[in-house]
Length: 338
Image (cartoon, rainbow, N blue to C red; front, side):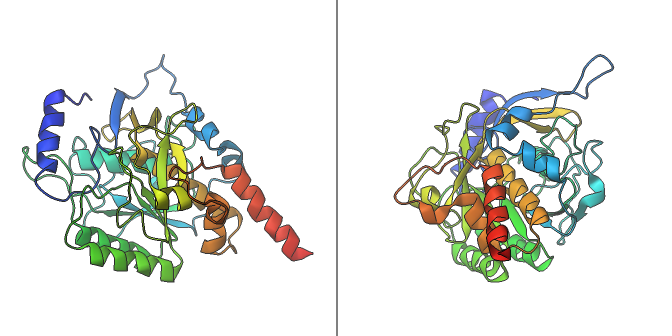
């Protein structure tokens, strides 16, 4: 798949028309690097290990594939559930919208399937496949276009708020929001109330910081219960496109936002970058931690992952260290048993 300059111009013109979530692919949440078909007999699909090593996830992944009792709400586009590399036995649809793609070439389907692959692909596939044993609850907020002329996924704050509430009520423990507000819009009060609802229910929310390269926060990333995620390159440097800010720096974490390979909706694999693809690494790490420590509270998990209480005045958060988070939770339990 190639996204052309003409498509980028069209995308930007659509953005100027109103509030949207998630600048997909170009000049926004993600950048397309390459797409590969399914490997043939002489090709070997190589798992994307470098991003996992950047955040010390490999050791935690060796301990567990995740527990089915830990449910993740994927509020995104629909997912190509028939993809042979998806662990579809643990994927369910929630809400009235179909979680299944009707068009595997739509940007909503491409995006949703890519995020699902990071979390729920089969181990050994080209995708990170962080927690395929956990339950993935797909709640599309980006609909697929009804006409060829409307290809860029969009949603209102009110629609996103409704999706979040439905995900909480369906029993999720973690919600992944690979979405970003581009500008203030009506319905933000509903969105704030929905995030308050997740806090009351102890459902952790992971949200992409956004890719406008600006200094500041949105109603999502400024919410005190949300963990914002900034993208890092594979050398451990913050991506220039990542939004930064006080709330992002204090409560957020960094994760791989460059050279991430996951599942392509039409088959095979795709490589993307941006804060949108960074968010599921944090979501997956939390899902594995909760699988290993089922008695941990949401506040404990959040503190272990972000170490938020230890930071003051930073606008760029540190990289996630999944192994350190595991050690912190384990040490706390050892102390409690004394």
